[in-house]
Length: 312
Image 1 (cartoon, rainbow, N blue to C red):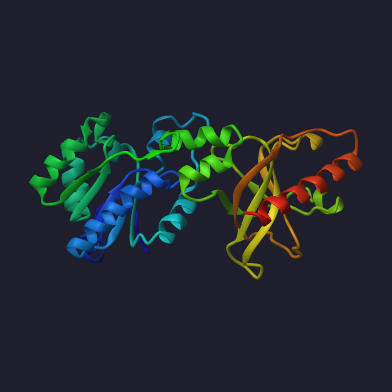
Image 2: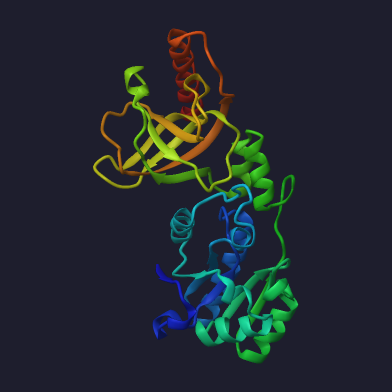
């Protein structure tokens, strides 16, 4: 997959794609619907499949002090888009200059002039340009004028209503990862490097891979059955495990993180990149009368997680 991060310096090899435009946080089934329409349009006109998105997320740009809301990092989004066959990723910097473009200027300078797009697909609720003044119908009109086709995709409905990143965040906040997965089309995953911890789990017989969740929407704190992909290094592969997400009240944790115990694993994962998929919520975080009670509960959690994952 080719990644382009500045429309002003796109080469001829970067131009001429059929793209889906959006933030694609989570790359859920509604996003996949829009991307598949762009894929089909590209196949008809002989254009590569592209996605045009923004970094940071515009919501982060306009409200930098708001609580974290993202379902995935930019890196995780890139991995997911590559998995589904996107050939061109236009990850444009969302800054004051881009935010200040009028709808017409965005269509003319970015889509037509900078990237030379041949076809564009957006959702029915798409807005763009300064003050979100342009809508999908405006984009169709600009496309007809500037020489690129535009398809407006209907919003996708799931079993419980419209599929959206907001609905997925709600499901995760309530400890319903399987409902989130139904809307995502895949397990909700937290990706990132393994960072150094206090190595307390090692002394308890449960060494964990610790990961930061900074910048991400926090799912409900507690214990989860998880599927783990080690993405690089000598231990790359797929594993089952149990994870604690939260503040670790037994040990007065201050910053929420994700601590994952991989079943039947022995090795050093420091610095490796992991992708941890939340499968089932087992229980909330708790404190215990002592380490023996804590270890007994971890034993029970892991046994339950093994049973769940064996049936998944």
